[in-house]
Length: 156
Image (tube, rainbow, N blue to C red; front, side, top):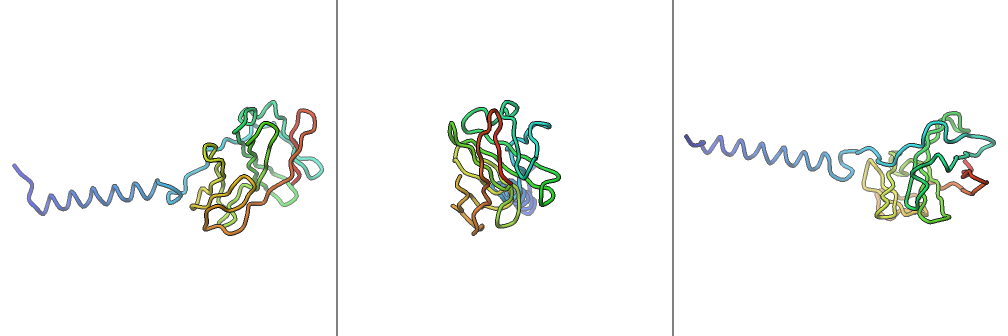
């Protein structure tokens, strides 16, 4: 028993629509994916005198070049503050506000591409914080970072 032309067109049209919605809903930034950059382990950092002190030995993903980690700090000077810390080189650590300058969405560290990507739109930032692809127009807020013994210090 064959399908009528009308039934065939309905089934085909439904399949095409579902496929398009699936691709648009999960591809790129249209689906607002969550960041794959891992959070810092609980108790691995502290806030003191306007700085964040990270115990590097507890930051598994920052132990190797190309790693990244996210921090969410309660009680920072401006309330809750979120950072993303990346290690693009052997002695090179960088910290940024974990918020796209276009829409405030969280960022994801794209290690293979060496950039930070907005999880809400298609904005991309290089590791100096500069916009390399909009709609964001303003650079990321970047924090000063240095070593003190076995800790990484970020001035917030």
